Length: 145
Image 1 (cartoon, rainbow, N blue to C red):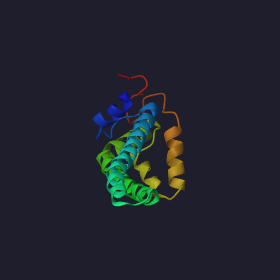
Image 2 (cartoon, rainbow, N blue to C red):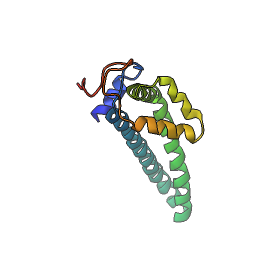
Image 3 (cartoon, rainbow, N blue to C red):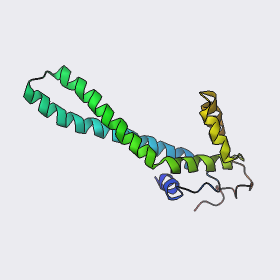
Image 4 (cartoon, rainbow, N blue to C red):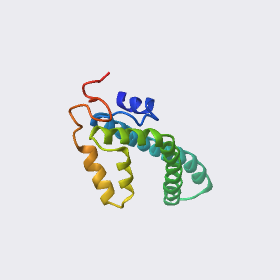
């Protein structure tokens, strides 16, 4: 969780370097939060809809159908809002991770290439950072606070 908060605190810091641990844990916690938002939306919609529809005489299949679509839609809206809120911090962590591997942050634009761009970025993000100081700053493993 410490690494997630570190990413949020440096929300607009596109300077310096981010080690693999900071990058991956930031994105893992993002995924966990999105999953929780989705599950909560399904729970809220199911509690709301099931009470109303069973009182109206609908059978459980119709109720389940509406809960699935209604909860899913609400979940996607909540996740979209959350992802907009963490867009800049996510970009900043990605750019700092590229800096750690000795690459410019502009390499993030290769992600716009379908499939191959994402694969290339994944390879870059998995690579170890440069052990020595590079043009983007000192080794973050040495300067852990």
